Length: 225
Image 1 (cartoon, rainbow, N blue to C red):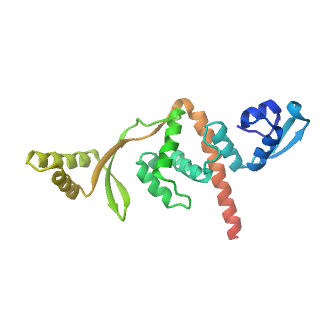
Image 2: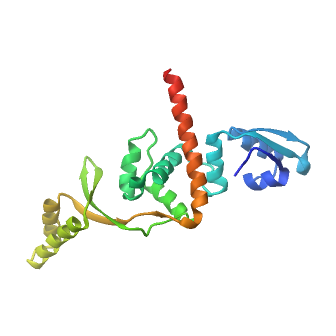
């Protein structure tokens, strides 16, 4: 994580993943980081004067979590904000996450959300083996809607299906009967839990995210006033 201090050329090269002093300077400028340079070549010293919250978040995602530098960090920030700060968001299916993010100005596809979650899992920051949550899924105008139901309601829906099968219904007819009675498609999934062994990393990430959110709120307030 980039801090406001002086780095040797080797230190900052290791953080940013580039060797040339020119490339290091260009990267810092791209991220909006204020800095000064003393010396040349490998003897150069880079003093980080100020790291804006948005830049700090981007750099942490790239250097600590391995997200591609080409990522849409506004979309990623919004997703991670809900994922880490809203307990109800983490327990819903990715299709429903997509629905909620669609309501913001920076929607993300289910495939993108899946890649983000997969990266967090591979880093062992989270694991998708928590409690089971049950849903009723409906579709209207090509958009899915998920509603939380109890285990009993979920089980009752499948009971209707299998009773229909026993009575000689084919799969499509049994499924249609279950759908009509249940009011949708039954679905279940495990919740995603945080790995307690990486709470420090998750807390740092959450702190960076919230700082960028507060900056946006402050900017919006100033614009209104």
